[in-house]
Image (cartoon, rainbow, N blue to C red):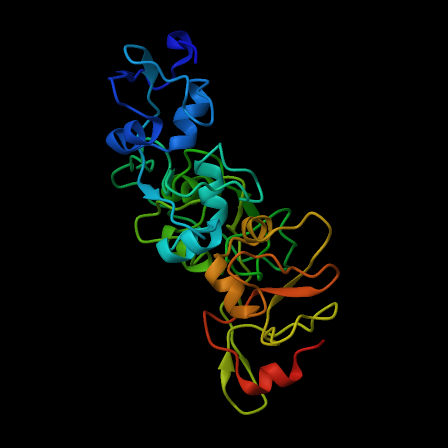
Length: 301
C-alpha cells in the first residue's frame, strides 16, 4: 500500500482505524471494494492495510453486496440496469465479469452520482426543416428502440443533454424523445458513444399490417444464420456470435438489457455461459413479450 495524495482525484481521505478492513471501509463510505483497493495499491487480501495510514476514498455510489453465485447479469437484471454498466462502474471487474467476489461491494451507479444537466430557460427549436428522404445505417451502436427510419444520427458525448442535442441538430425535443424512446423522462440516461436519431423519415412511426390483420411497428427480419433453440422469430435485428463475444459486449453494442436479451433468446443461462459461435441471437424484439408457440416452432435451428 502506498500514499497517493497527489493523485487522489476525489480529494477524499480516510485514516485507517484499528480493526478496519477493506470491506468495512467500503461499506462505511459507500464505495466499491475493488476500486478502493486499486486506487490505494492494496493487496487483494487487504493484508497491507495499516492502521493510522491515510487512504484515498473514491466518490460514493449506490452499492450492492455481492452474494454467492451472483453474476453481473443476475445483478443487472435484479436492479434494472445493464451488465455493461456494472463493468463500467467497477474498474476491478474484468470485461467477462468472471472475477466477482462474494461478500464485496460493487457500484450500481456512477461514482459521484448521475450528471444532472442545466437547462436553458425558454430555449426551443423553432424550425425543424423537412424530414429525411432516405434512411442511412447507424455508424455505431444505437439505443434499444431508436427508430431505424432515420436519415441522420448523432453520436452522444459525455455531458450531453437532450435539450442541447435538439437545439444543435434542429429537431424538437418532443420528436427527439419520440424517435429515441429509450430516453427516460428526465433525460438522465443518455449513453455516450451511442448514436441517436436526429433526422427521421416522415414515416418513422408508420405501422405495417400482418397477415392476420393485427398491427406491428416494424417488419420482422429473417435470421441470417441458424438460431439457438426457442429463440424468437419475431425479431427486428440479429447478431451472429463471433469469437470473443460476451453478453455484456452484445448488450452494449445494441443498447439492450440482459433481461431483454434473455427474453428473446431463452437458451441463454443466467451466467451467459452458453453463447453459440456462428448462431444468430435476436437483439431487437417487440417489447418484453413471451415467445409464442408459433414463434418457437418457426425459429430456425
